[in-house]
Image 1 (cartoon, rainbow, N blue to C red):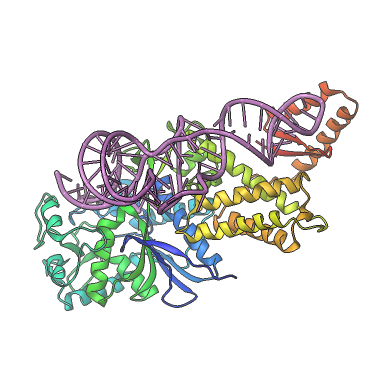
Image 2 (spheres, helix red, strand yellow; image 1 turned 180 degrees about the horizontal axis):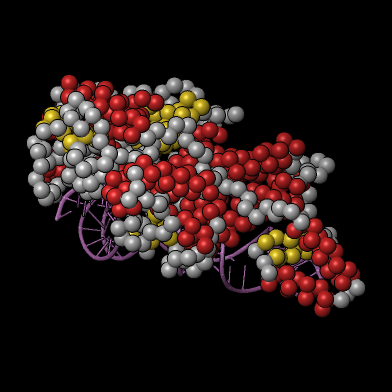
Length: 497
RNA sequence: GGUCGGAUGGCCGAGUGGCUAGGCAGAGGUCUGCAAAACCUCGUACAGCGGUUCGAAUCCGCUUCCGACCUCCA
């Protein structure tokens, strides 16, 4: 594999930086996963699909990647007042289930959806409840370091103390004074000394469903703590990439960095990568706004915002058409266009699989160079902060040559065997392995045999110049979703439409 | 209100100082019995107003509009 210089936008420095892993050949990546208290909606999916792209490209470059993505199954509160109810507990009460039944239900659902979108499972998927001991240890360390205090069974992180020696607003670019003046005072004043302080450990009320013993009494961990504890455990004090949705940057990740520095003296990750939101009519898709929809609603089209159903790969392709750092606005028009484009590139992938290069004759240097250039573009665009839209452009350019060779309107012997091989390898690598797309309409069973029979009958009619019959067959098939494509050579292909 | 980000042709969406992506839609053409598909050709767009520069979508300032975060969300 050729050495590729990869550049990654780092939220910490607000610049694109060359990606240099701490240990050559290895990458440690931590991504904040879902809180499993309800169905994942499409906006949630986008984030994980974005990181799947990043993960896949790192793998493609030959890195050995340890990809850790957590499951938050405790500690995530309603509201951020540290007095709200645990999301999982609340849902458990509502549905009259054990909290772990809720967790199980939505974890299974999450995995199913991730698989449908063809995302690779992470290397490790740790849960908050599975790491209570590690989190308690972390709290103790932070207390010992003097950056936290205990009040009535709860432990809080002392942001002002921390700020004396560290830049608390490093990630979100805010000054402490601004944060202090602009942070709304939350109702039900609590025991915190400073209003920016956040809970590391929260004392549980007796009726609280999820609680564990600790040196400070029965309680449960704060939301930000689990990520620090688990990234520490599986990736070490310092690792390469920490990712999550942009909405986590200002608070969750800021607090996470503070925790890590307080306990270990080091910023956990070199590169902070934040993916942007999926919007609907310009607004962030979220449950509270009521503009979110679920993956299965997308597939079936059963939602007021959807004109029809769209397949998982069409959705994935749609996401790939925008860079992960931009918002993507959902609209039927935009995804319709993506659907056509996706099918086009997928058709080329199919043609390529069946394509054999003609005998190499006189090599057309210009063409040979052009095709190699497009192969280079695939890498160059992904190297530029995972620019998937540009990668699609390169694939589209390659697909034109593939189509021409497949249709025999150009002779594939005009390029060298090496270039032809590179064309095949590059197209497949980026379409399938890197962008994580797959072919959806591969027919099982007898469909193709049936179609071949019908095509044969139609061709007989054509030979007899019985165009009335041949057109009737073509129209009839179109009505039920099969499209016939005649070639110059007299053969006929079919595709589903 | 504070902080940050965005505004690109009918739609989506790359591009960060000159070489002016790509897709969808649209127009024309090649091919075809006719189509379709495929292939070829065609759009000179960068919110507005100033400024810097030989040259700006790209840099700077102001204005307008939109969004995110600051309050649960990926």
